[in-house]
Image (cartoon, rainbow, N blue to C red; front, side, top):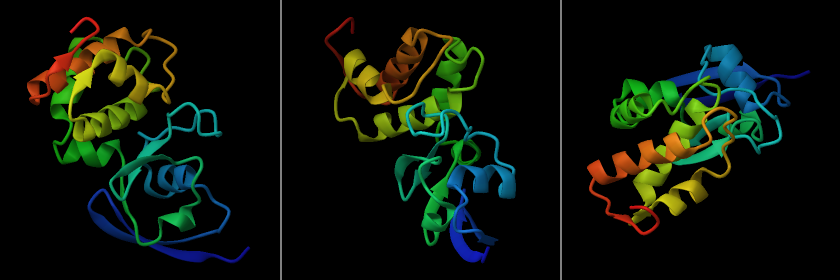
Length: 164
């Protein structure tokens, strides 16, 4: 099959690669660049394990083709971590034991950071709603919601309503 050249910013570095048009973004990032944070889960876009940020918005890497990343700014958890963008969130996840087996953690952190960047007010219910597209089989979600709520408050959002 013919290869297509894809150029993108990946975690702050300009990269260029040839890829078959049918390769999914998640496979491209994991195999070509050995990034381990976006994980292959359901491969249907419902579990959130493959969450990446493209042009400032989180998306499911299993639903995109690598060629769709051409010209994009792509960030994975590795990039957010290296930039220090989510250090407080990672610490809160650690303190609340909100990552048990760890399989969902990168997607949860990516979605949590997007919530914290876009929310103008905060509630536990709103956090749950925003994270509802990310599955976790271990924690029961409460520790994750606790961690995100804690960071929301430390970042200056007022926690409202339901068990604030």
